[in-house]
Length: 494
Image (cartoon, rainbow, N blue to C red; front, side):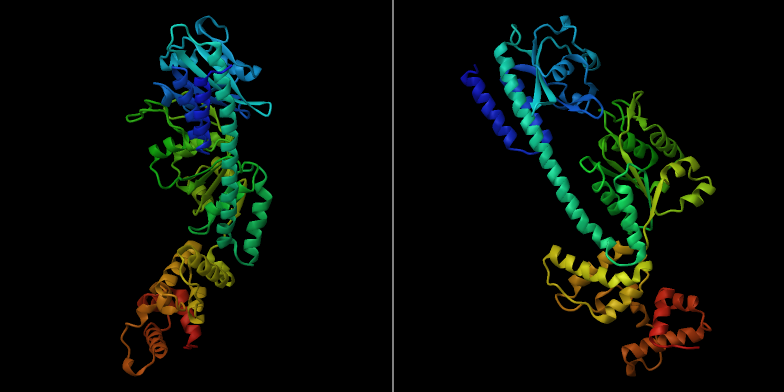
């Protein structure tokens, strides 16, 4: 029977667990409360990873707690492994004499475990983890009453773990719904190129195949990668993204593969890399064309062997992740120039998906513009506005070097500038409107309307350059496509 002190301790633990749906916070509260109530030096909560047959430290209390977090060992090792396998708690007051005791972490962390109690965390008949309390401060060690109390903590921890994991699952589902809305900004439209992209996503998502996304900056490569992940069997596990072109080689290696304590100056603690953080899920390697030769070799090993080694380490770590890579560069050309490994290219290019630039989707631009206007109005809580035909015409003709991302920025700026009125040409940036034309000198500007003024400026420049459109566009400070649009608009002929 539990006494009043034990009952009070369990009630306090219940309050702590129900106060948060964050798994880390929940388990840490259990570990701290268990050690405090039982007056012990240390405690830890370990969860079972059924895919790897490992027990993983998820929370710990004590002097060496930080060093234990995310450490793992085979689920059949030690007293914790025995408790997990047998689904039965145990009390050991002299660990050194117990045949099941595993001293691997004691040796590694220079810690001495004298005695311990350990209980399984059971939910609906399945062991999902264990909780252990080490080194009773009492010279008599632990008691049966304390073991019974720990069983109560283990039951609470099991319920808290399941609730937190369900909450995380709901959050991911909600993120997936929001993602579906976000991806629509890039997938809106009816052109065959977009339908082909969506068909390819649907075909590859449920597989484990490596995907290579090809497209210019701003075409939505990361959004497509997230969509593939959300529609895959790995959707319940993390999606981890890293821009390979944003970090120098030494830092990128540490970010990708992690490092061991003491691997280099400043490595005070072990750090997990992106591949470990993405365990069971998907890692998105953006700008993979920027990888240095040395990192290319290490990535090739992951693709071939599905394993890697942390910086400064010797232990091989399995990589249970799906890889989606992306680039805006021509990897075939880089391969021919010997700047990108041929074997790595073919490992990545298992299932390529090419994302069309916005200039190849001109028929979709009006729909994208109206969608973005609605989104800006909703997000920024400003009035929903319309757009003038003349402004839409310019947006449709513009080259959009920044693709959908640039269009989003242009529309957001225009909605804010128009002050609740109709978006017109004056609310668009000069690289789209070609406003630099207006300031150029031309005869009789004071008697001409703005369109006539612009027409005269363009005609004058064309005649001066013998109708060389490239030179004329340079003189006027506009793109050649913009010039061609104006020539057609004003029906200018040689």
